Image 1 (cartoon, one colour):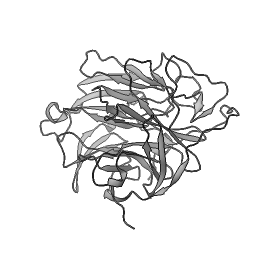
Image 2: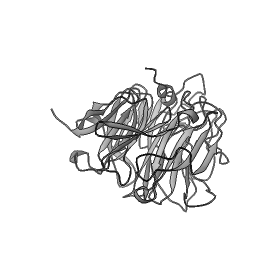
Image 3: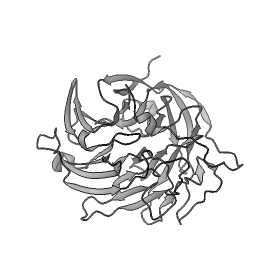
Length: 372
């Protein structure tokens, strides 16, 4: 089976821009760990890009397929909750990329989808589930955003509600090697940014929350600390994980792209804007993978050795890592886990906060207690 998402997530090479002479600051790996194993629990999917739970539906997992279907999985039963395949482009990075269930989905049945339309442009819409909570009305109740995409790659993907109640969206820089249009540092463009909107507002008005991103495929929130963890897919050398405190009264923080790849300065690319520049708390080179897949800080109970550790991985190698945040906003004890998930596209949570993984090969896995 051809896996289109492989092109979407991998860093794009090319002659590009030379790096400056300063060495990159890597993140020391403390060693290996065996905090959990993985077991396959769902098969027969078509390039899943998301797996997670919906509020008020504890017995099911919800899955996005890149081609445009929303699938509800309960036990061995797969049901199509929504089929958008006729309205979704799937070239390169395009497709059905993100979903966020309203925090009150159990009562208001509202959810939000991020997809690429037939022209390849970004769309975000509000949808409403039917009374049974298992199917979704075929057309959006509202369109919240349309962003023109100049290329087929670097569309970002993640939608998630933050601890402030707003809906957050990650968008890539619009594609091409080394951000040729310098969109990520352009304060007047949505590309290369994390945005947020109050979904109760009419009309919706998006705010720029973070700038300087290349392709933030996945991010998550740690509500206990009011922080966002952002995994930004790299160019030719480095993948990075960023830990950012959300401060609504401060200018949008800057994660550095395309002036920096990881912690390495690039020639002829400069920082713009007034926001604080945030350096990554973890990086790895393309010897260990090619496209970082962000996860979340684990707060479940089934894997006590993993408590309060941030889990993330890589699409190309299937490697998984975990680390621990430090009180000063950094990270320590970065360890490569023994478990792997091939063609990893998403790390989600079930209704109990336990870890589930989506694989572009068509599978869903879950984390289970480690065995020797």
